[in-house]
Length: 302
Image (tube, rainbow, N blue to C red):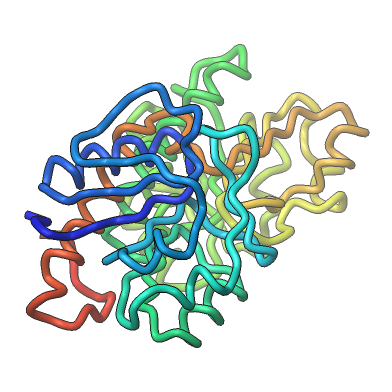
């Protein structure tokens, strides 16, 4: 339980609503900034304007995916983004938790300067692995919508074998797709083979994708440049789920008449309630444990 804890939520999307629901059900109170247009209420929760006093009373600050280096935090529940300044972080007590999906440079600097405990949720295995489930389901849903063939029997290529790549490859294989997986390291290639998938060294990506029906990219680097796209089938579909700007030369793909879609942040689009519950579980665990143990960022969700 989070009895006595007070959280400040700044901006976000539908995922944040589920996080707020879960933490208030755990007996926390909350202040919401950037929620002026919100049409629902929560127990022991107030909607507030941006002020330093709001942050001074926080046990934790909960940001959405992240804060831009200019302090901007996007929100779906107000007409304008929220603009945070260094003074807001300075107002927080040392040791206050700051939860964020990812942390850009300025956020990290401000948290370090004022001895705030920064937790990058999307870097925690307990969040990232579970988040890979709605990510994979969303990518598969897009593939089904954007093609005129079944995934069963289709030649699919998954680029990358990290958390999302592993889950996506597993689900495609279970649906009867022919799954090639491109990875860089030998231990990854061995694991791909062990799972009855077709391993391809990343340096041979052109061989893997040249006759593919669907290519899923999970690698946040330019792995599908014009030189590779040139030799792919024009009717192949590329679904890039890597973080922006993705790993595909979208300009060249469009010029060549190929269908290439950038689809980051799928959990918040296809399953915001599930994604919010995943985030809330980790936030609740960390805060519940914080009174007894210093958080080191390595524990698994239990």
